[in-house]
Image (cartoon, rainbow, N blue to C red; front, side, top):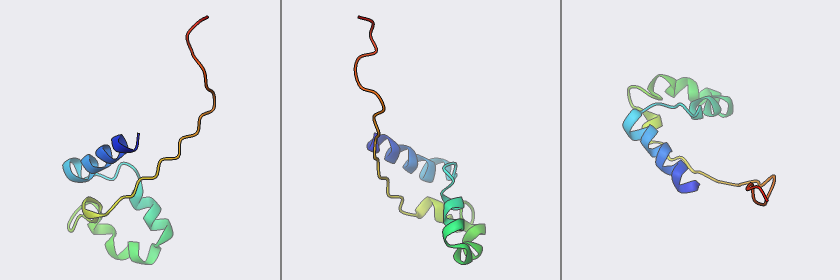
Amino acid sequence: MKKQLQTTTKRLQTQYKLDVLGIGDKYQRQNFKKWKEIKNDWENGKQYFSTCHIRIHVQPHITQSGSTLPK
């Protein structure tokens, strides 16, 4: 699961250069002053989104275990 997320995220950064995950929105809420300085270069210009390091932490939660096949 983690590898798939890493691959998808890297593709969004390098191939599409689009922040469809909303990482910029989260950064804006946490670092508003800095965001005001870089917002125009997030996806365009200096493209901070394409070059930022994104750490992925997967914490699966299993709500039900067992077989889904009929008995």
